[in-house]
Length: 508
Ligand code: FAD
Ligand code: SF4
Image (tube, rainbow, N blue to C red; front, side, top):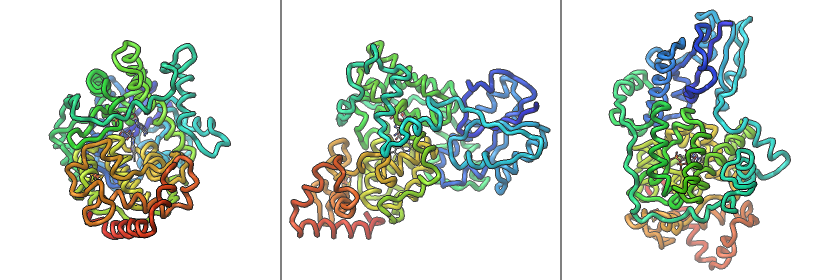
């Protein structure tokens, strides 16, 4: 049968079994589409990165002899939907079947599942051959349980895939070395130099703008540094393993305004577009530990993110969509302050984390969770608006991984299904893990008054406002006993301060 094979923008895996044989009977279709640029307002670098990587992928397939139909954004009809376009292409190439790989986003999955090609044309959905688990596997493991603890899933994955295991036991005797992964960073060892290759995408950026695609953030079109194909992604993995990985574990939770990526891998874009397979990344890191080049807590801390969190959040996504995206446990309704779009706030930690997100389309995990997300939850920002912001701004943001992280882990909007407690803190935690407070307009110690750090009063007010939902949670520990020990005057002063902050978010 003559087959039309659709390749989505995050399915750039040259080792997929589709490409093992070259045949004139297979027409590979790749489409730059307004439907995909416009479902949320995106960071300029994210649009450039995906289109540039798609183009590179199409070229490499063509060079290998495959038949490709590629539509650029200038050629794209802004109004046409994917099903309509598929109708046209199936007819044009006189295909008798359509094949596509499992989409990772619910939106596209639904659209393609509902699509009915003209009569006589068969439709097949095949595996993307990327993940360790199948979509429903997490749900099957936790069937009947009210809480789905990541740690349980992660241990089962370690055993099943025999990763960091020795004679049936976890290496070193413990499953989890989180406690060793919490050092603050003093400035040494240096953040490794950015060795990613530079690309000039000025022309592509011009085309994107001319096509009328809206965006925000720094395009850095002439100085573009995200990996665009598997070769570059493998180089980046190699450089990470030899330069940053040795320090990853200790400084996993550290933050600094002097170092935008610290010892993180910057591999999420390459992973999420499937240039790299998660197993090869995990194996490369495990090998470093076996060769005694990195400590166990570093290997374990890194592997947990990929073998544990990444697969787990995907399982939550497929089990809980489409309702998941609507959840708003605390009924938070504040719109995002304007500085989410320009970083102009006097809160140094937030300005730094949002500022680097606008500049690099990247912030590392603790900045996303304990600075931006922390503030958003304390201030009562509307979780769906926040979700759209996260989905737009980060180079690695695809809904299957972004949504459970934002709505679940960071905003507790699913009522604690994914996170065991809300991830919030006062200035104390931010000061302990980073160096932002020293250069800040606000005073980390003060709780009330014009110069008081906004996190402080908001923190107490958050727990006071949500006592009904949270006071019985054992993971929250000392918060409520401490709150109840405060005098009514102090409690009222904190709550008034918090109210003033929430009424004036734009001018913080
Ligand atoms: P490293 O710190 O080097 O970690 C290595 C890899 O582990 C990452 O590349 C990623 O694939 C995986 N990983 C780490 N943490 C997580 C996690 N919590 N969930 C899933 N995978 C993880 N990650 C995304 O890939 N896309 C997103 O849209 C995204 N949105 C997030 C939103 C919020 C509010 C939060 C708190 C986290 C989000 N994360 C997201 C998870 C994490 O922050 C990023 O994966 C990480 O910062 C990517 O940078 P890195 O490759 O340098 O990661
Ligand atoms: Fe952030 Fe508060 Fe510290 Fe300023 S004082 S950097 S706002 S935590």
